[in-house]
Image 1 (cartoon, helix red, strand yellow):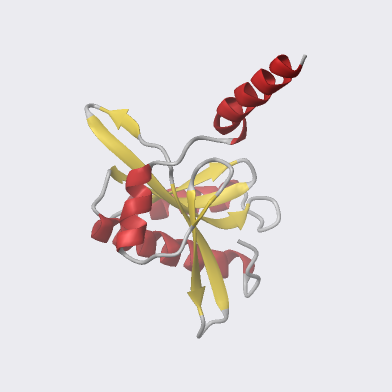
Image 2: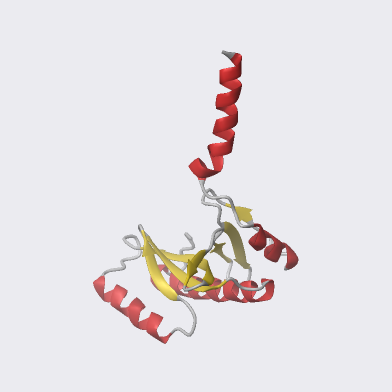
Length: 157
């Protein structure tokens, strides 16, 4: 009985990353560490960075996907930041069309919806440490600007 219990425990520990999220990519860790950027790893294996805008007394979350996808032989990484709650911030059809139009004008990144959250997302070939930081800055600023526009001074995300 004891051997079965230990075996079951070992199997559950091995399966743990699959049950609770993906194992984060060590290359992102190395890039963030090289830039001295503080992060946490969330349950999905994404790297969560909190931007602090002290002057405005606001914060903004930015996530760097802990996994990549391959498209046409390119390794693609997502960097994203939440900007609004769809229902709470009144994002209706007209507002969605405005966001699509804005995405057309953006030089980098676009608006996406996942569940009840509006995100600003950049998808790029896996970047260098320096470029990753630039992309994170763009995502944070774009999402926070839209959050201010949609929710006023509320800082929920």
